[in-house]
Length: 171
Image 1 (spheres, one colour):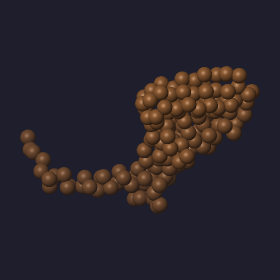
Image 2 (image 1 turned 120 degrees about the horizontal axis):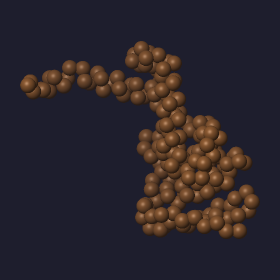
Image 3 (image 1 turned 135 degrees about the vertical axis):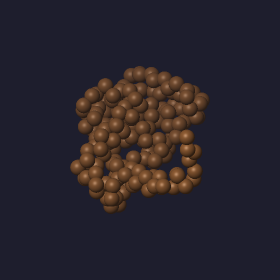
Image 4 (image 1 turned 45 degrees about the horizontal axis):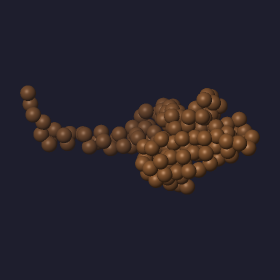
């Protein structure tokens, strides 16, 4: 068997890496103009792939939205409108979950579920004022949300980023 040398690795692998990076930028919607590869693939196929990736982002955020996840197709419509095409570079699922919960607050049918899910996200993450930089919360948390019927929901989390969040409903 022949062993590979550095010369073997330079025979187009750099071009492949560049083409992959260009295509990733096209799919993420951050490229300023179509690359040669994207042109060969075609705009219809690129748009279809973007749509699939956009829906996958919701699927990744869904486990963080325990209450909204039960709303089925209705919350998917809200999510499709709430998520920007550009994906955050890190922590996309929590950032997307936050955006979906924020958007769902404006929908009367989803508002209560969104308020509770948003409360849980506040307990689990910091940096919510700029949802592109969410980080796990290590500090303890105590917060509340008021539902449409006036009930108050409290959330409590202990020390540590993996501490459980407990929810208590009251009147």
